Length: 111
Image (cartoon, rainbow, N blue to C red):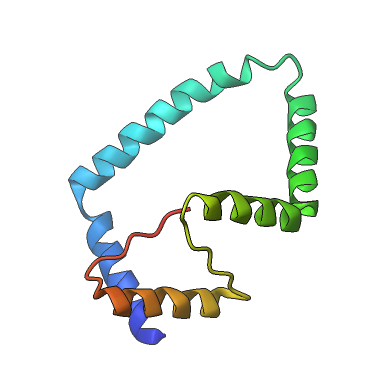
């Protein structure tokens, strides 16, 4: 694990010194900061909107098991294989197994 941390620190230090990368990050932060106030104006009561969003989030969390099963049924019909994992380590093991079977050279993580 120490190798992973030191590798991350080395790569992040290199990336932080990359002026082109920093310029892109600053540009995007600037654009974000410019549009957020405009986005907030669409709500007459921003605190009420936040409260509603919080309630929707918790409603989704409370029914997550049913939503995941519904998603699995729908995506399986389209030919996708769903792999369930109990924890992060089991998920990583399954991903590694697939990568070894397919002789992967690159892996892209997404949410």
